[in-house]
Each structure stands twice: as C-alpha cells, then as structure tokens.
Image (cartoon, rainbow, N blue to C red):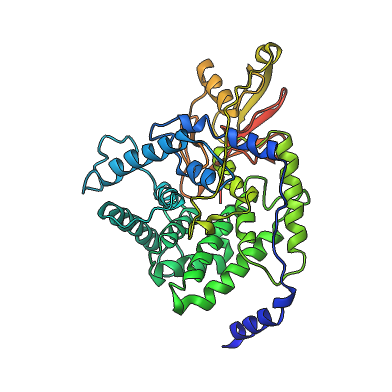
Length: 432
C-alpha cells in the first residue's frame, strides 16, 4: 500500500489522540435574532429570490418558521419543478426567466432531504438525472488531463455530489475523481487565494461518499482527501479566528465537526472560531442569507451530514417576527462614498451621497442614476455579483474585485457591504 498504507496505520496509532470540534452553545437571544434575519427573505417567493439554502438552514437549526416555512417549501417545489421538469427540451425555460443553476438544483435536493423526503418518484428521478447530466458536463469541461475548469465552480461541483449522496444516489468514479484531483492539487481550488468554502464543500461531499462507501475503488483517496481538506482549512485560520474569512467559517466548521481528527489543536481552533463568530454576531454584521443558513446548523451542533438521516421530529422553537424601526436621526443622515474604477478608460471616480446604512449596491445604483456610471449583476447562491462595469464585462477567469482604499479586499458582496462615511471603494477587474 505504500505511503497510503503508512498513512492509515498512523491514523490508527493516533486514534486515541484524536480531537473533536465542538462549538459550545451561544446565547439563545443571539441565535434567535440570527434566525429572524431569514424571515423577510422567506416572504420573497418569486423564483429569482427563492433560495433552498434558507429552508435547509432552518430545518437543521433549533428554530422554525411555522406555516411560513411550509409555504416556502411549497413554492420551491412548484417553481423548481415547473422550470426544471416542465419540458423535455433543455432550451425551453417554460416561462422561467432563468433556469435554476446546478448549485440551486443541488440545494433544492438538500431541501427535500431536510424535509425527510427522498427523490424516488418519476419527477424526482428526472431531477437526479438532470443533476448527473450537469456533473457530466462539468467533468468534460475539466477534461481528462484536468487542465480545464468547471463551467460553474468546484464549489457547485462538490455541492452537487453531496446532494446526490444524501439521497443515496451513486456518482460515477470518474466524476468523483475530478473532485479528488482538485483537492489533491489545491491550485484548482484557488481564486487568487485558497477558497475555504470550496474546500469545505468538497470535504463534506467526500465525507458523505465515505460513509456510504459508494466508491470502494476510491475509498483510500477519499479518506486521505477529507483529512487534506481539514488540514487546509485549519492552516487558513486567521489571527482573529476565522477560517479564511467570516463568511467561509460556518461551512468550514461544518466539515471540522463531522468527525474527530488525529491533530492536536483542533478543539482550540474551533473554540477560537466560535469566539470570533460570537463577536461578529453581537455586532449584527451577519446579514447574508446564505451564510446565516450555513451557520444556524453549526449553532445547533448539526451539519449537512445530518441530512443523511434527518430528524424531522426534533422540537424547534417558533421564531417571532420583529420589526426594527431605525430612529429618524439615522434615517436622515447622509454619508459620502467615493466610487472608483481604474480598470476602464477613461478611469471613473465620483463622490456619491447616500443614506447612512446603505449597501454598496445602493451606492452603485445611485451612481447610475446620477449618470456616467453603468454596471450589471448576476444572481448567485450567495447574492448578486458584478458582471459588467462601465460596459466592460468579465472574461474567462476574471472577476470584479471590491476594495476599500487603499488596497483592502472586501469580504462581503455588493448587497451586504455597507460603506462608512468618507470611504473610497474601488472596483478592480482582476484575473485568477
């Protein structure tokens, strides 16, 4: 068995020293307030706003939204099945402006499993076949020599394998092999830096495959890749305690919580992450719905692995809606944000006045209203992202990076980041 054999013997020898990742309970009011952030999102029932991750996060949390939760799942089923199954033609959108992406379909399958449903019907089988077709298409894009890239991302690739796995649907070795290669050669998981949430999602997918032993010929590689993913995440911990950044930390914790590790310091690293998250929760900085939906299970000591055998009878506390009315003084306060684009000719720079508390997306919209500035966005699992600025579209392996002057990359997207008075925000086209 060579090096792999030695690795597994070492794991056995160190078994007694294995540590676990445990997140102590947080204040119930803080957790409930976090859950309440999802309630307004669950009122948005149009297809473009539906996000199956919200449902999954609530079902794996200690809280529930009652009839609102039921209506949300009903809307997901209606819209997703209409758009994905209403026609046998891949080019017919059946009245849907945009068909759900591979990642959205995968999240929808997770949502069904969170409700203790298996995709066993004819419609369910068609959804499974469509997701497998997506994966085969991505596999071809990556290529037999692994020189290519997925049309979407390795995050969605891993998410899709996870969704099929929790429904106990086997994925071909050749598809799994592409994900294994990406973990083993981590430059495939970089976008200028290690993408912690991508590594975490890959690790979760592989953990599920390991538990079912769906790919026995790859078992040794899968086990080693899971350990590799965890090690990469631990090495990416910042001095503040985040794994990568605050938004990738919940998914990273989900992977670290799945099983013990023969590594000293795992428990301390998780406690440090918990302390960092607690501080950010107290500041109310967690606003992104996708990230909240990934954090709520962690705070309930659960992970996506619990979707393998979900407990749909577990008691959950009813969330109460809250209406927070800012004071008139805050409503009327204006701030000035300078918007800068140096990646176009001629360069653009303009001071924009907006209400205090406005998002960066509000700043962009105000700049557009004033004239001389244009931009375009596209929806994604974690919120809208920029596709064009001043008529310049992103090319292959390019993206519009958001920076706070002089050169600090923003960790939040345009819908979540709220600039402060006097800040300069630069939109910079970069390659990776």
